[in-house]
Amino acid sequence: MNSVFFLKLGLGFIAGSVAVTLTTVAAEKFGSKIGGLIGGIPSTSVVALLFIGIVQSPEYVVQATDVIPLVMGYNCLFLVVFVFLSRYGFPAGLGGAFAMWFACSLTVIALDFRHFGIGLAIFLIFFVGSYFILEKGFSLPSISGIKIRFTPFQIAARALFSGLVIGGVIFLSKVSGPLIGGLFAVFPAVFTSTIVITSLSRGVAFTRSLIKPLMVSAMINVIVYVIAVRLFYPGWGLVLGTIAALAVSGVSIFVTYSLITNKMT
Image (cartoon, rainbow, N blue to C red; front, side, top):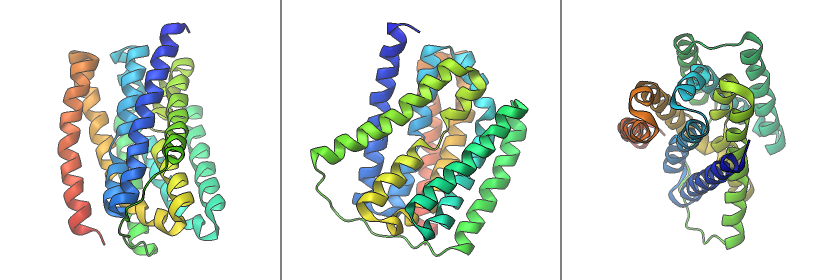
């Protein structure tokens, strides 16, 4: 690793900080539906995969995405476990969710899992099952947003927290190979940042109300973006490939916006 790598890492830290900070501010200003939708936009994946490609290569990014659908399935379980255990307090909810996520991720490493198609099939099972559990098993009503005047300290704290998480993801992708890099490229960084920040500022009940729209938006939009990356990065390169993938993701974001605002309670 050299100074160029750390410059790229720093740029990733800044980009990730801005993306996640805007997400959490929007969640509180516009309510749980829109906040969950914005929180599910693939900001972390865009930043992480782009900077993995800058540090490594577009082909390396494609290899790293092999494991992403399976790990996104684990992210569904992360949210379900948080909702279930947060009834016993915020530490129990977040601690239990992390314990589950890391335990499942260890199986990915142990099995050296690298099959996109099989991972996608497993993801769909986890996604549908998790949505059914959240819809039928818990009362998670939407909560309207309230206008809050954020202090410079609050904004700085959000940016630092989220930037450190995403910077760590980029660093791990550099030192650990494409399997670990792909696994941590979809580490629930936005989920964690959003859960911690909104729980501290608005309470666990508000955070729980974000979970269902957050999951629907994140799972659909991230998977669509990753599929687009696999299609466009090899032939189009990082810049054009990212622009094309973002364009495709924009369509999925519009679809999930319509779904969340019109269909969800």
